[in-house]
Length: 328
Picture 1 (cartoon, rainbow, N blue to C red):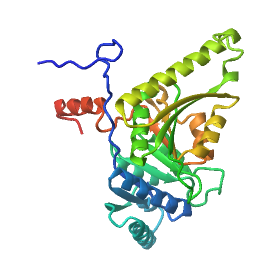
Picture 2 (picture 1 turned 120 degrees about the horizontal axis):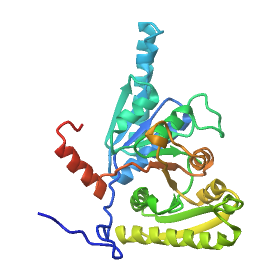
Picture 3 (picture 1 turned 45 degrees about the horizontal axis):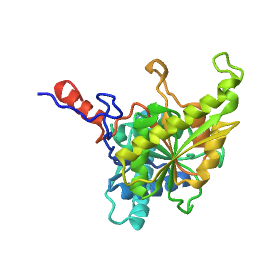
């Protein structure tokens, strides 16, 4: 028995209204630093908006420590970790008493511990720096490692602790392949009752002097950018009819600079993360590096390969899993 899907613009098989993603549970890493405490409270607010559970993770790294530390030291590390989780949970419940909250004292190193805790559909939240990090310059190695390696969305909490809300979620778009993670950004905007602003930053100088692109074609390139942004916005509007969606193309000498400046007026900046070359190693490009180090609001990095619950791709994955007895 076969079924037919509605088509979009005369393209058979393309869904008229793409599946709307569901926002998953929230996992946040805590390490005792002020930035991690801020991230935990931000993650609690995010979980409350989503109507989802919050999972606190302190990765004590005791498996590795056991190679060079005695049993007494390992026990002390575990006790410190338990106390930290209890204090963080109390701070969260003080602000969000009805929130579903769990905690985990992990034995793995932090990056592996957070990745494992998030599973296939969770969202990981980290502070913009950990213990020993520089105050305003660097994201800690844990945050960078998670953002580069995760197969799920990762949010790096940046900006002022008590920053007033702007009512805007900013999406850094590049082309038609962004639709998958862009629908997740739309779900984030809906959860906040905010507008979604699609922004394509175009560095003109990047197209000058190349063999493939002549100066005479710059105007045509700009028009294609505007057309692509509008098509993406239209598809998001069809999936989220009640959402206010705007699209803009801005030119400048630095794409990261355009996005960093725009982040001043956003509650969250969402961007896609490119695929790993040959499927190997981490992939965190120059723009993503710049944003998670310098943006004025939290930054959510979504892998292009991420499949959110509720989407057409997720239904296909579930069918594949059911057909494969060895699937996890």
